[in-house]
Image (tube, rainbow, N blue to C red; front, side):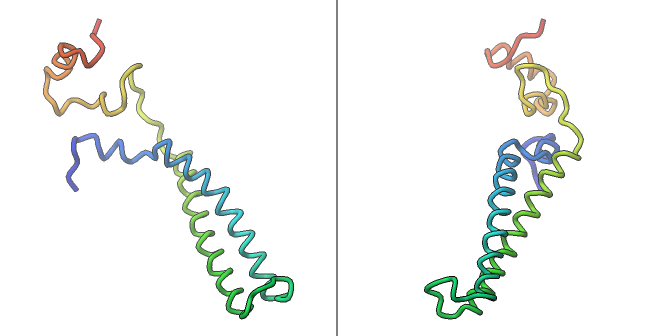
Length: 126
C-alpha cells in the first residue's frame, strides 16, 4: 500500500478523536438496541398478544433476535475500539503549534522547514 508520506501509516494507526466519539455513541445506542430488540423478541415469543399488529409473531420474534445480534456485533466493535485506545501506546509529543503531520517533514529534504518559515507558513525557529 502506497502512502502519501512515510509517516502516514504510523499516524493512521491511532484512532482519531472522531472515531472515539463515534465508538462512545455507538456503545450507548447499540446497548439500547440490543436490550430493546431482545425484549420485543421475548414478548413476541412468549406473549404475542401484547404486541398488536403482528401477523406472524414467531417470524417477527426471530427477526428481532437477528437484529439484536447485529447490534451486539456493533457493540463489540465499539468496545474493542475503546479498549484499543486505552491500551495503545501514547501519541508522540509534538511541539506546541504543530500538528502530528507537520512534525514529519523529513521526506521533504533538509531545507523544508526553512522554506516553510520563509513563505510564512510556520513558526520561526529561535
